[in-house]
Picture (cartoon, protein in one colour):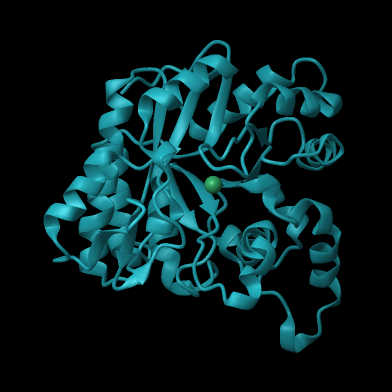
Length: 341
Ligand SMILES: [Zn+2]
């Protein structure tokens, strides 16, 4: 793959891709690794993981590379960081099966990165329910496949990101100096939380907020100060409620005292924030909160909740960062990925 970043154009750090070859390989495996694909009577493909269905059928836009490139060209997006679809994160299947599945995801995604030099970087999938296996897959993804980032869930099938068992993975990510994208996983929601699409509008940003809080307050960022994370969907509710977390560190009673020796403000620079927000005022608030070097563009392509007009989104951020916003955001994306450019 090319490590060259674009000299102009938007860099999109939040986009999802599922290779057709991945789905073909799952069908061929015929359930041997607890991953299956079933087609419904409307010809939609549903992935099942240890019998648990993804929450939606595979969106055709996840796999249509020509349509993606046409959209990128039309909208001035020079480069996308391609990450998998979190419904396929497979944290609930046995580790040995997840090792097979994440390797397949990483290899099939990398083929598209390599086939279109300069247009894509790849974010790895890892079997995070087995932290040592996840560390090994990350090393393979970075060193052998040239992937620039890793995408992980805001939790690991219910286990929070401050769980000490994850330390071998954090250690590997820190040693490899690889960027980490935290993305909510759409599982575990009840009918109650799904009503009105609340699992997407409220559940996803809520999960990201909780993940960031766990990393700061639980001491992970204290133990691994070199780690850097992208919080998608504008960081969830974290920017708006940050002072609440800061205050809680000071006033929490002994029984609930955060493990971290410093308040959240000591660690917040380890977070980057994407601009997947549909409101100019909120984008400007985010840019002022995060600082000009911690805001990056994210579209959430190809999902309907995402940003369809990147230029309008960047222009809104410029209300806070000034007219050089696009260049600043590109520089921040390049710094986040640590690409050689
Ligand atoms: Zn997304």
